[in-house]
Length: 428
Image 1 (cartoon, rainbow, N blue to C red):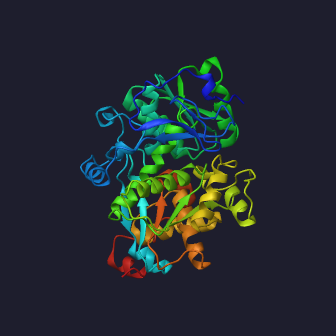
Image 2: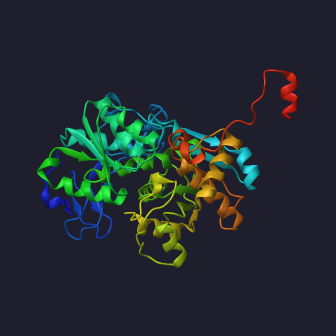
Image 3: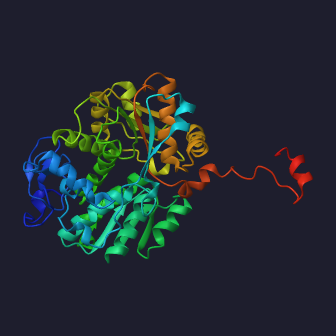
């Protein structure tokens, strides 16, 4: 597999990405200039964005954010984007609802306040619009002409839509056997959609090889060579949750795990808000949620391991079906550092949780949302998650994308158009 490091690119220090100052290795701390790279030239560890926030005053920054647009660009001062980002053609995702889930709270026995961060309201109905919006701005800055990705479904649609809006070509790669709804949604935007025979890990390996081939020249792979920028989009979930809670940290947050990047960046976002003085510094716990049929991080957490052993996915939660999660070890660190945990649920429990959330709060979640709600219930039942504390559960996508999971749901009854038939059905 080709690995792109800082040594293999030109100096990109002239690009305007706002407060982003450099790329920093998460393992050894080595810094390199901003560029379309994802691996450290010293130790091959993952690179992430390092910022210069030294000039910010907390009160002025808070006012600036609150006066911003009702999308992720209200947080532009904290993201790797130029100051005029809101003026560029983009899908402008974010500022989704934080649903106060009182009915669900009663069902689960939560007394401290339960919220669902419902990201199904994004332009392509998943949180992936956030991360793609960030990657798109990096692609502009580095002069790419094609936007691409490896995807379990939601990301493919987000890339296709963002590329169409911005005038980029798109070519995305998915496992060939994804849910039909996600295939249609990714294809409708007019870009190239390529099915790969194999699972997501096979698709990801192929994309990494394509980056090192002349055929991939000029291509920005949002979750490979643009990954450091792309991943920062997940921080906006943390920013929004805290702002919507009145600039307050949640006590507990339950996050689905695919690659693990979303969970690690939510933690990064919370830490940034603390350091900037935008929220009070106090303890919080982060819990990771997986499907039993693809639970490498949960398995490692329960065994007390620091290394995540890859698994072959077999679950209805295909958007989380990454058997070799890149950020798995970092998820373990965060769960343990914050006093959280990583848990998993069966496919049957996922379906039950989807129905529970829909029945209690009118939120139709995709299977990943069923995972987080199901894990939340399991953690409460097992005495791991404290029901007296303020808890936020993430729903990262729309249930219309995973209809097959609840295909048995249907009519309560079929009656003749008469009152007698209505009464005979026991509906009166």
